[in-house]
Length: 223
Image 1 (cartoon, helix red, strand yellow):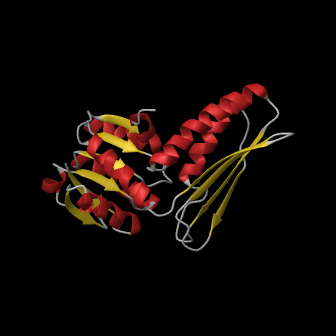
Image 2: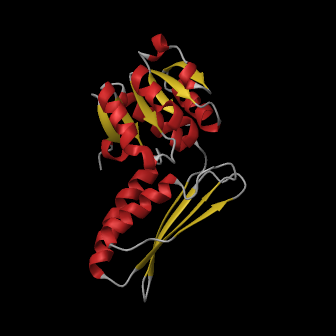
C-alpha cells in the first residue's frame, strides 16, 4: 500500500511517522494536492487532513486521480452528497470519519447504547463538552457533531454542545446524561495526535483493498 499525504501540518507529520513505523510507503506529501502528479496518484491512497476550504476545492481531483481516499478533514457536511457522488461516479473508495481514533469510535458505540436505553427510560438530559487546541478552525468539532447526532437519534432530543479552544489540547470529548438522581459521563481524552494517525493509517490499509463506494470508519471496525 502506498499513501500520499494531503496537508502536511501536525496531523500530516503524525501520519508520516506511523507510515514509516509500519514500513509503508509514503509516495509523497503536498500542501496543494491538486498539483500532485496524476501518475503517482493512480497507485496511491490519499490521506487528507487539510482544512474544510481545501477539501472543498480538492475532493473532485482526489476522487478522479487517486486509488482511494481516507478523509479526516471535517467541516464539509453541507456538501456531503456532492462528495459522495463524486467518489461513486469515479468508482473509488472513500473512508471518512469525524475522528479516526479507535477509542473515540468505541465511544460512539457506547453512546448509541446509552442513548437508546436512557431514551426509553426517560428523565435524562444529555450534554456534550468538547475541548481542542487554539489552532482548530471548526467548532463544534466533527466528533462532537457525530456524538450529538447519535444521541439525538437515540433520545429524540436536541443536545447542547459547548466548545472550548485553548492552548495545545489534543482533544477532549465529554458526553453526559444528567438525571434527577444521578449522572452518567463518557469521556475520551487524546494524549496526542498519535491515536488519530494510527486509525487513519489503518483506514488507508483497508481502503487499499476496498471496492469503490462510501465507508464510514466506525462501520469498518468489528465490535
